[in-house]
Length: 146
Image (cartoon, rainbow, N blue to C red; front, top):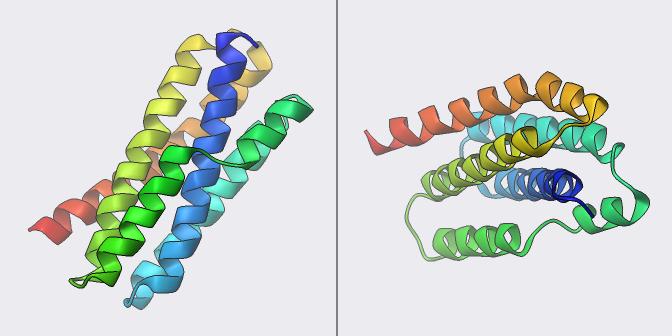
């Protein structure tokens, strides 16, 4: 597997992590507006991942569907922190913002490595949505810290 296809597979896996994490967080937060936003963010991650997934080989698609170990560890960490007390919503906002950082890093890396026109075009089409999601969670994190 070349670096570009490895990066694309990694990006899809990170997006799948994000989708699962948002779904989980939506079920555990207290505030309805957070729940609704997290459900929307999960949908965004799923839509982007599904489109990019179509560009992967069958074996890479199966690997990406599993997500990453880092994503699983982050989700467990957020669950543990929330269970120990404090503001559950704030814990999830912080951890989801960090997950958005991972998505943007993976997007940028994949864009820099990809030369295939079809893949690049798809990445460029989805990048604004990914960036907007990142900025939204970043703003929520900063608002929670204020």
